[in-house]
Image (tube, rainbow, N blue to C red; front, side, top):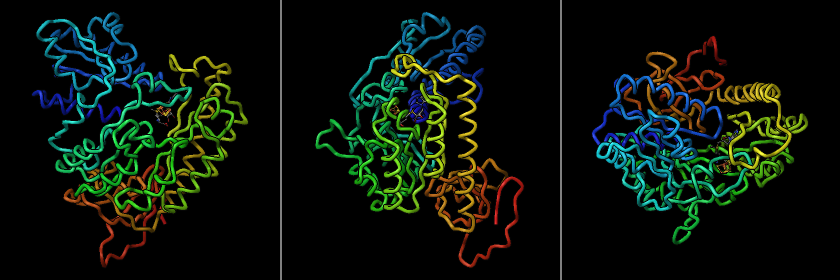
Length: 444
Ligand code: SAM
Ligand code: SF4
């Protein structure tokens, strides 16, 4: 979501005549877009802001701005604490940045805007006309969140849930496709509740069907789906809507019922396992990824073992795992039973070790298969290599010409790495040579 906001802000500034530079030393304007989901991200943003003091001292004309969740949370107090800061813009104010820059230039007064605006008409997404889009493009379909997960700062910094209209979203998808996008990723904190409050009450499945009709949309994905609201209708979409990729991100957070209740997640371990089974019945090739928080207040060894057990039972294709981080104003901050840092770290390492084995095993099971890869661009693994994704969202690298970017190419998977697959283009009449075991990967 933050990446989407950064891309949108960059587009707005390009329209205002700004150009991107690689080195902040050459910039006339530096915007730090921030995340405050975990304390570490917040610290990183604030310490970068602190370091910009030297740049401002050297070149006082440079405008320094902070945007996003940290700006929303701290508001005007940041202007008091950081004298070299010129502009503070919260999560709903990105469209106003050009106006704020003009005000700053006209009055010399530092600017702050952290109001919540529950009307998409005034927001940047509606008028989106990107000069060029990547092969895969994000589209925000809703903002904010009405859930109350005990650990989470998002509802505080992004406000109440508010959906964009189907027409507006489809319009944005059309302009992204016209600018080169082949895949769209629909973004929301809980896409399952899309449409609440819109006239006609369109649900998320309706939106998926409408986006799928846009000519040129080869692939669709979405994130994030909250397990408590994942409906049979939405699951059915994986069998029904052709461009919808067989991949779902379904954050479980913990495998212990006791901790799930303390987290206020609204589902049990058993319900989550039933959802996984149902998804696999509807779409046997579906890939499932998830998020887990370790060391939540009150998490004992038995709870943690339940989480490890859940990982073994589900065998996620990919997992993002985090150490619990106390966030201001959240109910979890006041919970007793804080887990010592060294225990949190130990648990994170053992959880990640287990998941790395599972991910690698699932990747190895792909070796020998042919999968359609949507090519996104040059790969970082080496010269002449391209990188793209399988429908299941696995990164696949293979040798190929740059003109394949933006096309879907059948690739024979020759080797599995911990976080990606290696392959060769599988064309008619292609007979694979015996595959060579690569040093850091595993082939057959
Ligand atoms: N809306 C999504 C959902 O319901 O799962 C998640 C949004 S949140 C930005 C992304 C992930 O950050 C969460 O799934 C959770 O694992 C993690 N997270 C959120 N708050 C956290 C906290 N206080 N400490 C550690 N991890 C946290
Ligand atoms: Fe945070 Fe829960 Fe909302 Fe996700 S659903 S953004 S974890 S409050």
